Image (cartoon, rainbow, N blue to C red):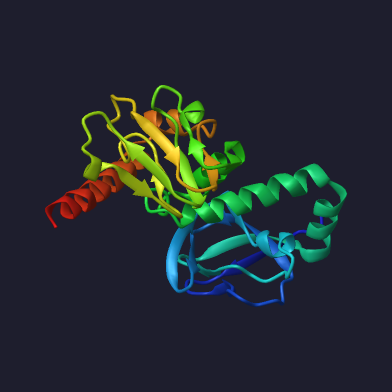
Length: 239
């Protein structure tokens, strides 16, 4: 009801990382914007996607990224007081948005997911689960070898069938554990173990299997990630 429409030309800086003067959250009704974090492009936003909500959810109220118009854009601008009122009045909505922003930020730091559209990351984040696990077996979280985890903290060790001792692989912060990357897609690992207490994002319920089946785009990036990890392991074995 209190939203306004803005038309901006190519190259317009809509939000700047680190700024604490924030007046609106935004929905793109036409055009395309780029998102840059620490000077590196981390996402592209298109029609129907939104941004700027993170500043209203964080404790310090600071913009977390630069957003710039890649094309002429038309934005729906939601005033700060309206956004705060919506978030304040609906605790369930606030918690859901906080979770989506938190997990989406972690996924964007992971090679397989960094280039996925924000709308896909939002869907994955909404259906993902944050878990903390003490050191020990993670087998109870593996469903026929198809579970996917993003490691937020700690170390996970994977042993596959036929692995020699020197072939056992370790994964750490912002690395992904799952088929195609940590084990062949048609097999089940012999051992998946947390070597330290770990914090994980569990993507098993995140619609990722469905998205993989439907989207060549996602399969492409995961295949690239798998090739990258495989090449890394091969180089390590040759040393």
